[in-house]
Length: 151
Image (cartoon, rainbow, N blue to C red; front, side, top):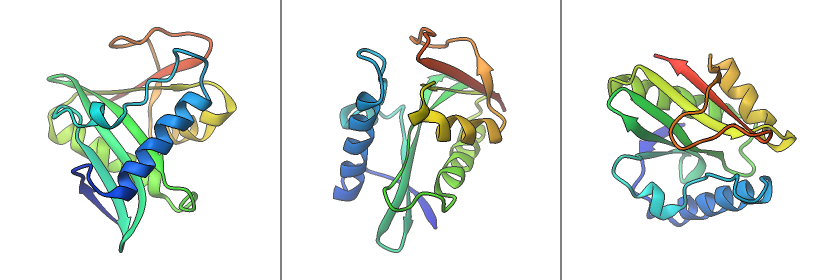
């Protein structure tokens, strides 16, 4: 598996991002999905990486800068057919390393509390993320949960 900085032009990357946004909205109450679309991910403060095996896209992950020492995990998604291969864990490790390299001392994320988001919560908790107060523009509701990792 190789993880590389992505320029958001490959059709497979675009399709996986569209699936990610659609799924976020499908599994979230109205107004509770915060997945970035393609235009949001083209912001220079939100680099995106893609994971590949040969020409096969395995997954995605982005890192949004919130402040000079604070980043947010965004757009974590494993491609259909690539689940249970360690793609998400490898991508999260990569994002944590990129956050440290940027000088962040805190890495945060927001995710859902329903069953559709259970694998994501388990992944983040295994990586050391702990429930936290809301950050940025998020407000905690019955549906969502925020996590943080001190770096």
